[in-house]
Length: 567
Image 1 (cartoon, rainbow, N blue to C red):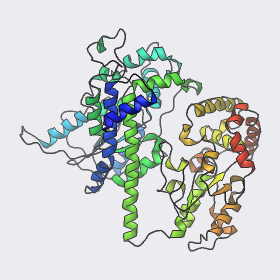
Image 2 (image 1 turned 90 degrees about the horizontal axis):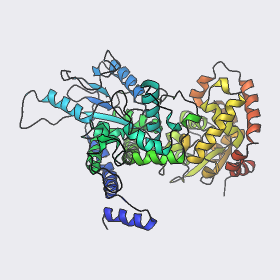
Image 3 (image 1 turned 90 degrees about the vertical axis):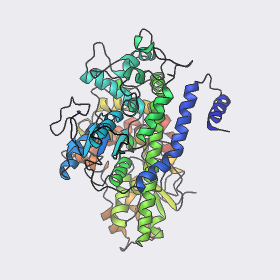
Image 4 (image 1 turned 60 degrees about the vertical axis):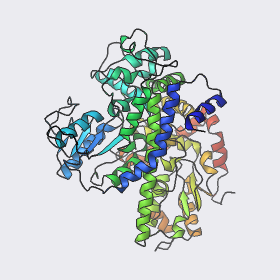
């Protein structure tokens, strides 16, 4: 059965009706693209790695708006200066922020970055390589990077930034305040000061119709009432533009030339960037950030209906985001294979006993400290350093995903669910609010609502511990972490050149709540005062019926936790 028939059959089986023929074709393009990802990634890896970009073979960052790209541009300027490379990056190095298109007379540059359209850049390269008319154009050589962001959050951020913070459109409200019916008409029609909307951002950069913004905004919306701009577009019976799949196919083909990152998976993205572009050492996840909204947490909450409407209007971007996540996974797997092969060739293959233990990192249970102990003191690859872990279809960091390890023995740390929740409150807020009951109450309401809407919210930080625990052969206790780590390492003879004993472990396991980034927030804080407030908030959250309902199983698990191997 071919893929198109398989799609139609699956749709009929689950009873979804009606179905757009254009939608079927779009998912067929998605299946074909995913099938090709591995070969395309290895094709990039098999090319001779360039130590530095040059004018004849430059590097370009295709900056998708509201996906953390402004930070990447700043880091690229730093990398260019470090390597004495010339560059063209709007808002940097004397280039105006208003320059969104490459000037016709711009000479060769080694690095480009910005909201640059694929067709614009390839024309620029053609002008540089073919100084006169030619019947046999020179094949263009360049390397590129683009970073995707989860489409619903990107659209919301785009709206609040373009139409409120910067554009200040008359009558505009925070995105979360709109109803579904309002968004059906206003989201596809709204234009920023650059005459652009917020839907289907990857198409603006990578499709051959990147300048046709009205079309890009309305690819899956059908004609918009009262909008003459959509009356000349042909749609199928379900509101999908009949050019949808031409545009989608071109977008896929062009973006697959690039190394792909995901803003929500910054550490994975950093690893890929530093492998493919070793000169880009200035890329750092401590610098990359998504600009915070000026609106309150309540303003950022979206109803399920609004989320569904945004997904409907951005169905194509969701397809591209899925392809991008798979591409990032394959890039990481390929890099791991190459690095492991190099280690074997050099006789540096990891000792079997060191590989025996795998750490499943439950967020806010001391996991970063455990990972650092393994990496820095024992030479092991636990948690974020473990390349054998897989994502299992979520968009969380791979080391935060509950999973059965492929081989060996797994362990994790468990923590009192109430103090874990307070730890998350500290993680997301500033020290000045750590003892603020009103801030805690408002944050709690928002956090629990978002978790119920999306269990993988905030990089899996809210997932119940029981979802990890049944994969853990050993369950360590956060409250007795040094003792349990010592027992675990002694049991598995993790000597690695040093005797494992109590004092060694206590010295090496430097537990810093929240890791170095969170510690930086607490430079001028009183740890004793924070501990007292945290204890009070933990007692307070245990009186919250919603919290206790959501984490009842975690409390039962924690109260019976012991170091002994689970059965």
